[in-house]
Amino acid sequence: MSRGGKIFLWVAGLLVVLGLAVVVCVALLFASLGEGEPDVRDNSVLVLKVEGALPDYVPEDPFASRFLGRDDGSLVRLLSEIRKAKADKRIGAILLEIDMTVIGWGKAEEIRDTLADFRSTGKPVYAYMEYGTNKEYYLATACDRIYVAPIGDLFIVGLAADVMSLGGSLDKLGVKPDFYQIGKYKTAPEQYTRKEMSEASREVINSILDEFFARYVSTIAAARKKSEADVRTLIDSAPLGAWEAKQAGLIDDAKYRDEVEDELKKRLGYKDDKLRKVKASDYRRVRPESVGLGEGERIALVFASGPIGGGSSNDGSAFSSQSTGSDTVVKALNDARDDKTVKAIVLRVDSPGGTSYASDVIWHAVEKAKAQKPVVVSMSDVAASGGYYISATASKIVAQPSTITGSIGVYAGKPVLKGFYDWIGVNNEYVLRGKQAGMFRETEPFNADERAKFEAMLKSFYYDDFLPKVAKGRGRDVEYIDSIAQGRVWTGTQAKERGLVDEFGGLDKAVEIAKGLANIPADKGVRRVVFPAPRTFLQQWLGGGDENAASVKAREQRAAVESALPEDMRRALRYLSILENMKRGETMAMLPFDLRIK
Image (cartoon, rainbow, N blue to C red):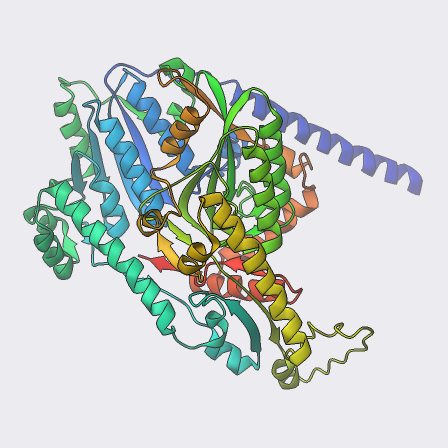
């Protein structure tokens, strides 16, 4: 056979294989989409699992979930199942399986609120854990009864705030950060310049920790009918084994999972029948409309999750972390604004901030949307700095008491790498044209003229843009906003006291407020519609939407490498990536520290 014939056969065979793969994928997709609603019998128990990160929203993709094992669990999905179960007369109770979580305290409060709303119907919620730390137990206290496996433990040892400093590491590498910040408490550069927290950072963190711990103690005391002094004593004596926790009254019993199911059978009046359980993966196929929900006027939901930057958002559906892209969010806001069937917009923010440029573009889109219809912001775990910037002009701002917000301030600078280059034997020279062309040289700190220009740029953004826009949005004068700004991080409670937040609550509360502002009658339902419309895994992989397949593949590869690293190393790499952005001269409106309270 000729060389050309062999090439033809090889190409033809490859095309046949690819064609068959596409046919199989399409067949599997239609098979997964063709499933109808599950058979839910009367007096069934909905089994829900709470674990992992629970991002606010991940697009549902039956194909990727069923055939690729992708976890598309999200907070919105969990809360939706609870709301449906509340309205579904066939569901008699919820069994909440609580595993290790990495959610923030704002999300934890939102889950507790939704469980309390479910329990208002008289239907019980039973919690089961094999073991748990502070947050898992906090979630469990929202339930009627708490069970821990007999071998299990409760590590309710109190709250600890963890702040990482890289100053010592950068010193050893010969890297000298050259930063400028505006705001006494905008201490983000300290992550790179110091080896320990400053007094300003310590003041803010202690304030947040005091409030969180007081709420944690009072919540447990109320749920378990104990005095706050007793709860503090029990925390100081933790960790506690399951039997010790039962004796102390922190849980109802130490039982295995099958024994908890037996308890539910008694509670629901079963005779000798097997407990009728419904898995969350099946119950998600129950349409809200079939239980009287999700009908009525349309309210748009737009999600801004993760650090804010330019370009497209990453919704986390491609096995990587979420980010807020200004192009995606602006288009979503504009489309929702121009859609005459949409009566109001809820912007859900879960972001520590990002670049000032991208934040301002989103702020402008919110401002324009608000001119035509109500825009309500729902703050999740964190909506700070740039995350607060994009929220400030909304018609109303809703947050949880434990939401981290505020941080109105900016910083910028560059890493000076001369010491590092000398260490590794690299010589870096510049040939310049223009007086300021060398402003962002990697090997030299700012000179006096460059520093003056640079600081003036930051001051202009803070005093001419950030403060006035927050003041206008909140109906306050600039001087007052400046007095509570200064980069200071506030809890939701503290922010509401200072006029930065209007109401306490979660996404459901924000939707209700948006409904009222849109003059939709209280007795009428609403339909929540996500903008932009979610893309399936196949659309992303084959280049559908606003990203090509190569971009998705590259992001997956980066995420795979990062996920193999220890968490502390991943945090350090995130800090270093911010340094890389600032080498381009970007002004950062971000939290002054990566705060973890566990």
